[in-house]
Image 1 (cartoon, rainbow, N blue to C red):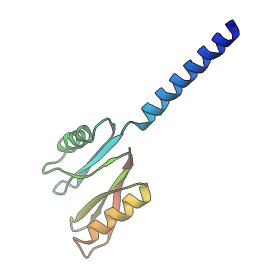
Image 2 (cartoon, rainbow, N blue to C red):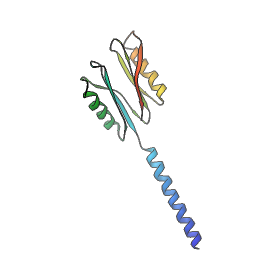
Image 3 (cartoon, rainbow, N blue to C red):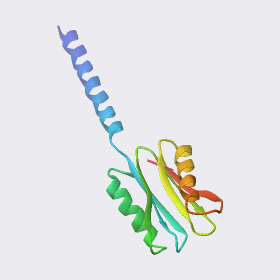
Length: 125
């Protein structure tokens, strides 16, 4: 009888631990990239519980060195990227994977300029 109770107790502890791990893994992780076109300075913030917090943190970091900062992109459990061109044009976007985010950022940048766009930052959350 004691063996049955002991086995049941171990099973319950294992189940609770499994649920706790799944819950923490399922929580959203957000990130953002802010950009100052006038200063040509970017700042990223990742690993935040809410996307609002990530956007605010990226803007705060960007404003330390630049002015006119804007959130170029934000992302939740995914990736973001920022691409710029030599004439100051820029584009930011998100994607499920880093390569997808980079491609989309370049595509957005190309809509604004005839110059070549290149990715200057990409991050995942």
